[in-house]
Picture 1 (cartoon, one colour):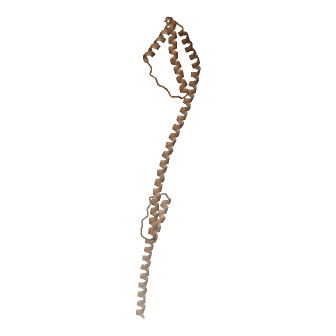
Picture 2: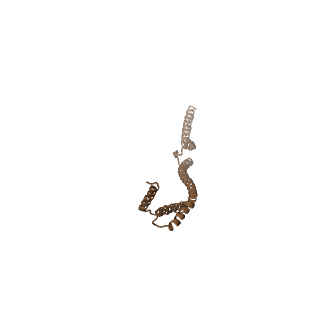
Length: 212
């Protein structure tokens, strides 16, 4: 009986040791295979919710939890790429908005400039019409008087000067009217010698009238 009791005690000790070892092994495997991957997933989910899209999880196994971990990392990669595209689109959209804003400002400035030019054109047209009638009368009268006058008379030179100076003035009036009608402008050459000669004649005439 003593031997039987010792044998039973030995077997019970071995059994307890085996069960303890098995429990420790199972606990290690559960911690390694189940707990750690689940903890990684929890921490990764918290990181993503906080906006840290660069967080990646270690793949600890090739089982279901390992595949879930890989899927999590793929999702993080996709979110990072999507965020990059959104930032790029936002930057592009901001550039387009700035460009359209500048175009709108230029268009508004051009519209204001057009309104100012139109106002100037209307004012110039009014002034031109006010000046055109008396100027035409002076030119017509001076021409008619000059046609029946002898070239040797002193006043003939004065009339020639009046006619000569009135014609360019009438031309300028027509140019103002053309500008008011928004027609294409014309460019012509000017003879400087003739201009100086005409100015000299006008000054001489003024001097004679002033008895200088």
